[in-house]
Image (tube, rainbow, N blue to C red; front, side, top):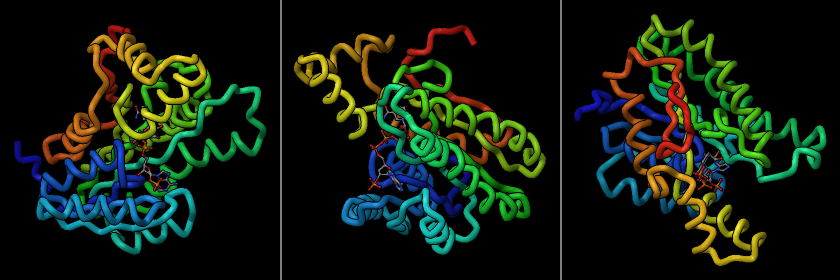
Length: 258
Ligand SMILES: NC(=O)c1ccc[n+]([C@@H]2O[C@H](COP(=O)([O-])OP(=O)(O)OC[C@H]3O[C@@H](n4cnc5c(N)ncnc54)[C@H](OP(=O)(O)O)[C@@H]3O)[C@@H](O)[C@H]2O)c1
């Protein structure tokens, strides 16, 4: 399927590996110029080299997306993106009693405020051009609570509510704002979570992995490219009538009719 976005410029935050990289890959395959990002320069350079092999135009920006300087560097590389994919690391598992005020503020900044700041920078040129696609990678935990990830769930639910009205306010300009909600995907973050669970329970990595797979109706873990493909479709020309939506991609883990 031709997504109708060849030549569009896309900033993909936090994309040197994992779900962000998968989104960058899918957008590059659709012919977009992609600005990829991460803090570790070596990993970012390797990801850019890999993406360039397919002939894509790739601009790596080594920066912390949560910092004002990092955001400035991203927009210096691409002042008027047509597509913005918001992504960032999530906070670690923690009992909510251990969260002091500063930790809570940090979590809200990382998983809510940063995305809003980037949208503030990107949206007016999108409106002027009558084309814009914004996708926020949040989490299945927005809909289905995960004890220990309460800060992540709360900040991301806050982002979802914050942007719900804004999505409607820019829809007439062919600017859409949507959310993809990953369930369990095989990334480095997932692997380190399984490792930590295995150590905590005193079981092997394989046993902890199998237990997690058992909780997913699809009986497998998602592959990042599956999420990347869905994200690229939400950025397509054809998806202009889809806005303000939360797309769960979780192999059926969220059990509900709606
Ligand atoms: N994987 C899952 O199953 C799953 C499920 C639900 C939600 N999520 C959420 O989806 C997001 C992506 O997860 P993932 O599994 O793809 O994680 P990952 O494999 O750990 O990859 C994270 C990527 O983000 C970059 N990054 C992290 N902090 C950054 C920062 N401050 N500035 C710029 N880049 C940054 C990392 O590069 P550097 O470290 O070099 O900066 C890396 O490229 C996270 O918010 C996670 O909580 C994931």
